[in-house]
Image (cartoon, rainbow, N blue to C red; front, side, top):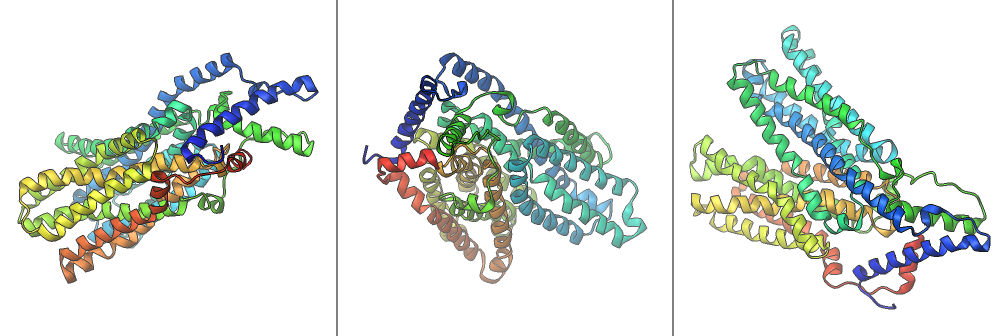
Amino acid sequence: LHFYPAFVLRDIDLLIVSFLQIKTATMGANGHSESTSLVHNSKADEENMRKLKAYQPWAFFVTFGGYFMAHFSRKCYSTVKQQLQEKAGYSPLILSEMDTVFMGTYAAGNIISGKLGDTFNPTTVLAIGLFGSGTCLFLINISLWFDFLSFSLALGNFFIIAVYFLFGFFQSTGGPVGTAVMGNWFCDKKSIENRGLIFGLWTCHQYCGDVTAALCTALVLGAGFNYTWALFIPALTNIGWGILTLKLVADPADVGIITPEVKIRMEKLKAKQAETGSSAVDEGPAPISYKAALQIPMMAQYAFAFGFFKLTNYVLFFWLPYFLGKHFDFDPVTANLIASLYSVGMMPGGIIVGYVSDVFGGRRASVIGVFMSILFVFLFVFLKKSEELNASALLVMLPIMGILVEGPNNIITSAVAADLASHPSVRGNNKSLGTVTGLINGCGAITASIGLLAVGPLQATYGWSSVWLFLMGCTFTGTALMGTKIKDELIPTPQRYSEVEANLTV
């Protein structure tokens, strides 16, 4: 046992835990107290597994729907920007300020919401986010119905910005807290083996929400209703889904289901009782601190890598229609339609990367590195040949680029975050996934928002070749930040048996 690859030692680790559980059960004959939850009981284990599996689809559905609602309510505003400007009198400046304020509070909110989800009841935090989002849209509707801008332009603009300031915070709960609830329920061995695929499917919520918002607005306007209905409908649905979310059980332990995480935590408690001779009781896992979360190996690297990958995605998503119109002389409609192919590729991206990483034994950094390396080649082609590319080449390249960019982004904020929260340094502490996901999301959003400021000046001063070079640099930097993890996955570092023992007592 002196030298084994890390992925083999994980299985050895579980075998040792099982042995300790059986050993603990036999202590009763020697005068020590027994804990039935630690005894290897096949019937009890089967019942726990049955209950866990029975609830998983419902947990998936409710959390998927919650994040779906977040994107539904977030996207509906952008679908009626033209009406807000032409009919409500919103200036281009106020529309821009709404976007900026939202992005700022959304980025900070991710970091805060993740911690709140680990500290308090996650379903309550999720429900508050949905209630708050619905309320903010309802307040925007009130300002439109009563034409606040006509009373006072300054006060009306202040009201709109203030509401969107709060809207960003409420919107931020869905990602980190929803991921934490998913991680709590999908913790069995089979789910962990298929974690990439499961979370890849789960992250489709954002695209479903965006598409639904566009369809809702199209139906409202097509039916001749006032455009404010496109904001009022998602306000109602968010509040309704918030009521449903309140009934969601956030953790299997809350309904008496003994999961592997609970077993490990109880093993730690048993060891502490034996060591100190105290009668300590299990008060549940304490929420992890920001400092401890950042000390998880590869946590900081993933957070900043995600920022560079997210920046690449933002540039392509927001600037592709402009680039296609300027350099290929497409009319605005054609440019937007062709650019939308990039978005089409984004939806299956997470599923593909997640599935492939599962096939390769959870080596997600290596798979992400391969995808980003291929993207680097595509960006190089745009750098050298963008003036020569025809429409047929774009029709093929853009969907593939959507897969290459968004697949790694989705997996980092879901399956990779769950992997990090399962590290031995926090094993037995299921109050870490929300904080971990929030830090990754928040740091990524902040990095991407700052980086976006460079795109306009770059293309105006040095042309689009500088933008492609900039994106190549972002792709390379993000991948390089994961270099240590990629090396460990491809060439596992031998560990000694003593390190396995240390994992059990961390």
